[in-house]
Image (cartoon, rainbow, N blue to C red; front, side):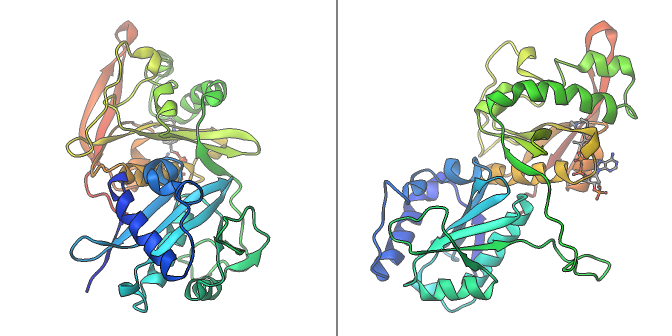
Length: 351
Ligand SMILES: CC(C)(COP(=O)(O)OP(=O)(O)OC[C@H]1O[C@@H](n2cnc3c(N)ncnc32)[C@H](O)[C@@H]1OP(=O)(O)O)[C@@H](O)C(=O)NCCC(=O)NCCS
C-alpha cells in the first residue's frame, strides 16, 4: 500500500475532523470542536494563510488516513498540531514520515523552533517526539485534553562541504510573518530603496523612477487577502513579497481602476507578486524563503500552477526556484519609457 502526502484544502475539513475525533475517542480523549479543534473548520485560514501548513496522508483510494499541521505562534516559532494517524496505518513508519515532513516544512517556512502540546496517554506519539529530540518544556498554553508541552530547535541542513554544521549553529536572525495594513508606511520606504539599489544593474534611473508607484508599489489588496509576507530583522521590515489569488500580475493598488477579480484555482494560475528585499539583506535567502512560504500557501489554496512577471533583477531568483521563461516583453510607462520584464511560470508544484 502506498500513501501520498498532499496539502489539505477546506474540502478536507470534514474528513480530517472525522480522523482526529476518531483517534481521540480511541484514547478516551474529548474533541473540542469550538475550542482547540476549531482550526479544523477552516484549515486554509488557520494554517496555510496564517503562514504555516497543513498536510494530509491519503491512501490509494484517496481516503485521508493521516494529518499534520504547523501554525505560527511567535516570531520564528510554530506549533506542530493535529498529527494523527488512523489505526490502520500505524506501525508502518508513517508517523515518523509525517514528523520528518513537518520538520522539513518548518525549516522551509523559516521557523527555527517547533513546539507542541500533547497528552501522556498518547504514548506512541510522545515516544516518537522524544526520539526525534523534542524536549519537555513549560507550556505556552495547554488545551484541556493536554498535559505536557515539548519543543525542538531546528538545526540547519547538512552542508555539501561535509561539515554537518553541528558546532556552529547560527540561529536565523530574521523572521517571516503575514503583513498587516499597519506595515504600509514601512513598505513604502523599503520598496523604493530596494528598487534603486538592486535594480540599478538592470534598468536606467529614468526607468526605475517611472516604474515607482505604479509598477513598484504597495498592493493593499494582497495584505487584506492575507497573502503578503514581510521579513523582519532587528525590529524593522527588511523584505516583502507574496502571492495572489487575483488576476493582476503586477502593479500597486493605486494603479488599478477596477476591482481585481478572483482567479479560479481549478483553471487559473496563482500569481507570485511584489518581492522587494532591503539591499543590506540581498542574497541572504529572504527572497527564497518568502517564495517557499508563498508556494506552500498557493498549493494549500488549491492552485496547481503559478505565473508571474519578473523584473530583470528578479529573474535569477525565480530561475533558481524552478520557474521558466514564457516570454520577454516591455511594460509601457510614462514619457515613452518601457520596462523590460519576463513572464515566467511554474507548472509542477512540488510540496
Ligand atoms: C529579486 C530579489 C527579491 C531577490 O531577493 P534575495 O533575498 O536577494 O534572494 P535570495 O537571497 O533568496 O536568493 C536565492 C537565490 O536566487 C538567485 N539570485 C537571487 N538574486 C540574484 C542575483 N542578483 N544574481 C544572481 N542570482 C541571484 C541565487 O541563486 C540565490 O541563491 P544563492 O544566493 O545561494 O546563490 C531582490 O534582489 C530584490 O528585492 N530586487 C529588487 C526588487 C525586484 O526587482 N523584485 C523582483 C520583482 S519581480
